[in-house]
Image (cartoon, rainbow, N blue to C red; front, side):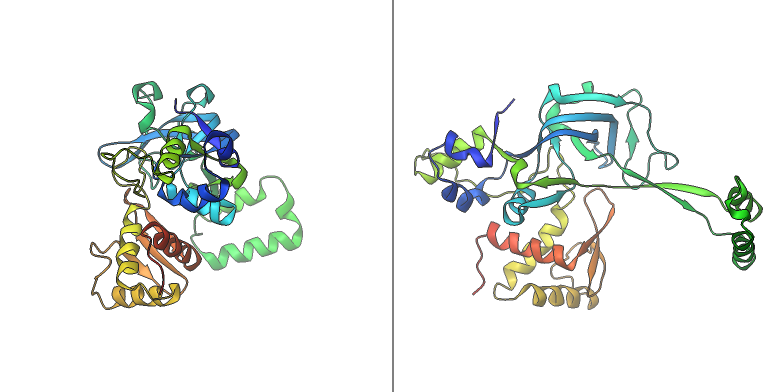
Amino acid sequence: MNDYVSVNDVEKFSRLTSSQFFQNAHLVSAGWAFYSNALRVIIGRIEDDGLYRGFAVYEYRGWMGIRRYDAMTIIRDNQASVDEGCPLDLDGIQCKWVPYPYKGQEPPNRYIGYWGHDYYIEDTEPEYWLAYPDFKEVEETTTPNNIDSFSTQLFESLISGELSHPGKLESLYQQNGVKKVYHIEPQSFQVKFSDLGISREALDTLDREVNGESEASAEPLQPEPIAFGNPVNRNHIINQILERLVANHLAATAGKLWLTLQEDIESETFAYDKNEDIRDMDEKALVWIDGYKNERTMSRKTFDNHVSDIRKRLRLKKV
């Protein structure tokens, strides 16, 4: 396994000063990770049809590979919410639960296309593993057959004190055709700056690059997207759209870029969203379809952060 070191220790393992490292960190494409002492995760892989197959639920301790974008956010903000990662320490993986762990919503659902069964983690090379934080299971109820009647019964039971009796609420549900339904919601890894690390290989390469010792035949470091073995990662589509937007409006503020993209969508010009992946957009958020064909929402604040990162990655400066 590629060794990793904390970004706080780069001076111990390279000739770079901390200042040099952080000034040039955006050049490092692959090799970013964060360390965790204990995480409950689902580990799986992306199948050829683009759907995610979960192998099982695991407890994980060790380095978790992340994209450069997430690493840059952590460096800039001292923390970040990271959607997914690639487990790097094989000895840190301990299986906790193999059967599908959630009530209802059997695969395929919005987030999980398949579940392990006869297909386990041993059948896939580690570089293709993709880990998500254990999903949150949310309980909801269906709409009553007659909302007014149900509301009246519920109010009367509350006033009389009957609602506190065991089984009363379930009885009202049954009488009014109300059913409990469950769905899963994705969570994020909460990563702090002190958790961030970089591989020794990536650090050595950056060291040589900064000190002018790269081999003549070697290509310079380029900040390309990381997909963890998946040809189209979850942010790749929206990043392409925003890169076109920024590249064509170098002097524009983030607010102006937001309005420009919104006008492009509403006028159906699609100069930036060439494949029409953005489904809706208002003053607060935009909704788009990611590489897994899932609907995702980007807030205005997240948009601003993405624009800032894209400017850095493309070395584009606002004039």
